[in-house]
Image (tube, rainbow, N blue to C red; front, top):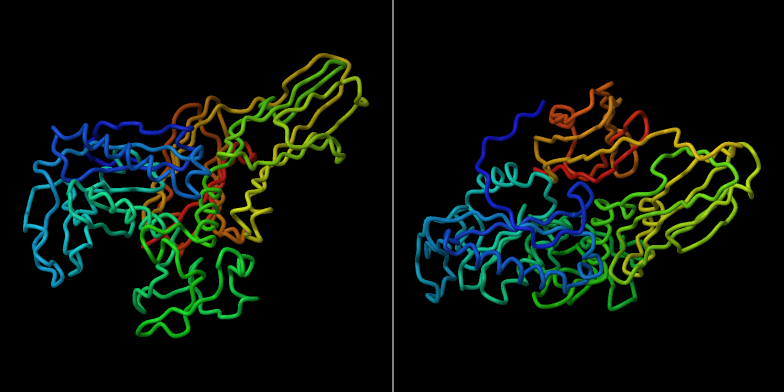
Length: 455
């Protein structure tokens, strides 16, 4: 049983709500340097940034996949710290040392514009106590001077152009993207938009080469020899630009790894009986803005219908016995050319239909459930919370992104109610990287979600 962290709870404002937190990409916005009297300003700033954020591709196309919450953390004093110790300060920002909640400070790492919270353990505590199921965190710092920084969180000031820092740093913290300017050998490594492969036919973004100025461009700078990027005018290099196609694809694949576009389906049972009446089978889908989801319905392996959310099966057209209705859902967006996308993000619902001479009978009641996996990304601690309405056999399988099983956990039959399970010791052997955690009720998978382990 997980013991909740002893931390302070704060008021949470819902800026945007599209679905259950267990199903959406959950953005959390924290404020630093806003006093209690300035909380309305913080919420207003959070709302304004949310609008800016979802005006950017690919977020605007997938706005329906995101929740946004703002947590009000009042500081004792207004503003950001500025010790004035960086060699590039320039004297335009006054030296200051306000008592702010997360210790956000300019001059981080000896760089004046690098504005980042010093008290990251406090950030973690606030998240764990108030919104543990977060996927992406922004920290708005109440300073009128330009600055920001990234890492586990994307921090930026309220100077107007600093919004661009927030979006750039989101590329790092959410998409694990590399800078497309040369940041130094310590940041070099194989990432979605950085590689040591120079061949256009072998490079990981080969499907984009020659489209929208995507190519294989050498990094320049001390130690940059042998490293390549896909574009020369991307937001991961220049603020104020758009994300290049390779970065857009990476962010979309990240979103698809979190959000299953199938919200629910009816009948909710996987096994139904039908006589000579008609029965409607339907999907409730989370659809991208300008819907690119495509559905394909088959009955006993034969095509039934396409690109519709429901079909009607007439019992008189079925022979007595067993039949199978299958629908698949695939996002066909042109914004991704990832070779694994058509298989790794193909979603399926299967109904086993028993044609009888009697009426409709739901024979396999599906548990009403709510599952939260947190935190994500995680370092050492990982937990899940589940609510079940009847005794259920619960098991967990963790695989790497190739499908290799890394850990199986069987909790056995649990009584109806809320259960919190600490699986930290079960995952401590995992290396940093992306994994998929799948939860099974009575040997049937009910949720599969990508998780990230990082240092």
